[in-house]
Image (cartoon, rainbow, N blue to C red; front, top):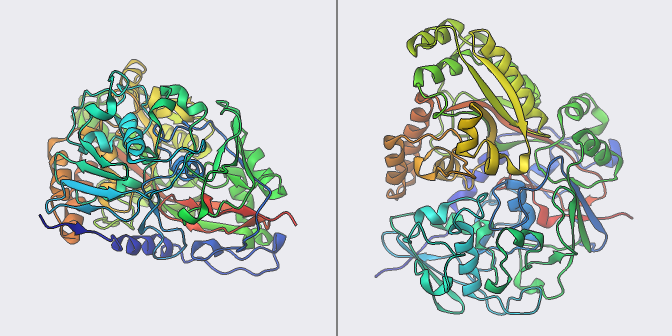
Length: 583
């Protein structure tokens, strides 16, 4: 059977759109801390340096969802976990138009497929070592994948692509198997350096999921289930110094068994990396400006107060990047709680997009979103607006008509869930709460810990129903820059899980599900883009997602931070490139 090797260079074109979408303006070198210029990190390396040493200091306003690479779905953590978790593939480690090209990491080369994209073979590099000096094998990679997706719900926070696509028993539980590597045959390891993936259906975009942290190798004997997060076994340039303390922080030090010659992805410049957790956002922002911190781990930019301050501070502009993240900020409308589509459409009409836009900082915060797919995604229709209103302030007459249609002419009561420590999310919820009250929809706002927001709260079916959560504020960046990489996980009914659910609206429309399948059986990118456009319209017709803003994040970089550039695959700086120069 003819093998086919896919280079995926087309992804670079998507990246260039991400980058060029925010043209920016150049700044002078005479600003605060002699910064490189406004939006300089958009397409070039700021403060390039080969200097090693020092401690790179991170902080975040919430807890990490999990340091376990098999149990995480936040973009910042996919970026950060690469310090200690090498993955099969990675994004190209450079700024510019080729930034989201796929390149090998643990893999020796890009994977090869059979003719119908149902079987994929990939070789891994020889001589790679774990932190204890033992060799990394294909079996370790296989185990990392199956524990991340076939665990009986013990690890509920990661994506479910492998569970959806592998030709495996969906009830297989790695923790109930006496021989998980032997019994799980959807991934074969014919030798210590080869993996063969068997899929149950065509999946032309399969290589893209090989960048996920779930492909990081994990030794069978080291796995402790949920407790593995306390001290994952390192395959990268850094290892845990002691254990991760939930809600407090973690420290990383150099892994002496990492070989830089095998790893073109990671610069590994600092001697150590420190992370503080649950730090107030305003404190983080002040410490960034004063030089007491280097990076806000969350990767969403400064908070609202600092955003307003920097927006009016010309002297700070040379140290600022105000970049389109590629993300959609949106509100899930939970279909099992607000079951009638007309009631959901009433919310869409009543929403004041202008006030929600202002919650994200207005023009510097991004662009009002009326469609579902970000502009850089092929198939996106930025002109699509099924719920228009004058000045984007809401069409109350149309909303009232929809309430009458669903039998709730006086409105109804519900709850909006938002993440603690995410000021923009909370202010979005407040703007929506006020707008909906104009048509009798009374919504309480409840905040929940960001680290467990999807695992235990807005992504838990029982919790949502028990607490009448009709809406939740969220954000999503593409797992990879195609319609499938952006939207499948949050709109395909087969991606719904009891906990750790990211299709938080619980949208399960057979027509939409069938279109996702059809897209992956379609080889022509333009035909796939047309299918993604059809899905975009249908998602909005179902009123399961209320788009808010295609956001910009305002980042501040100090003069001490080296090798800074924007990686659109993670919608933030590339953490693996960063170093510090305290001289």
